[in-house]
Amino acid sequence: MNHPHSSGMQRSLRQCLSHMAAMLYRHGHVLETVTISHRGLDRQALKALGAASSDWSQCQKVLENSQAATWNDQQRLVLTGLGRELLFDMFGEGAADCA
Image (cartoon, rainbow, N blue to C red):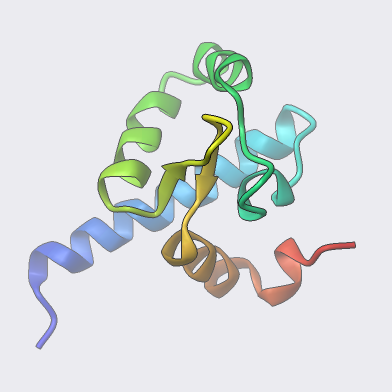
């Protein structure tokens, strides 16, 4: 049985992922920036996104708390398997194919 809380969480998680995707595109990033584990957004990029959108930091928190995003070895924010799966689910597998 689906937990009512988890579906609400997933809904806001999906909203955050789509917001994140839109913000990345708006700032000249591509989805691969966050879907490839050795790439990621550094603190400077995150600061710029946070400055550009009042929703960014809240979404980043939701992504991290739900374990859809994490910090890689270079201390850059990247999506986890869960985050990538949801993103591909929403935007289609081709959304973040490696060129």
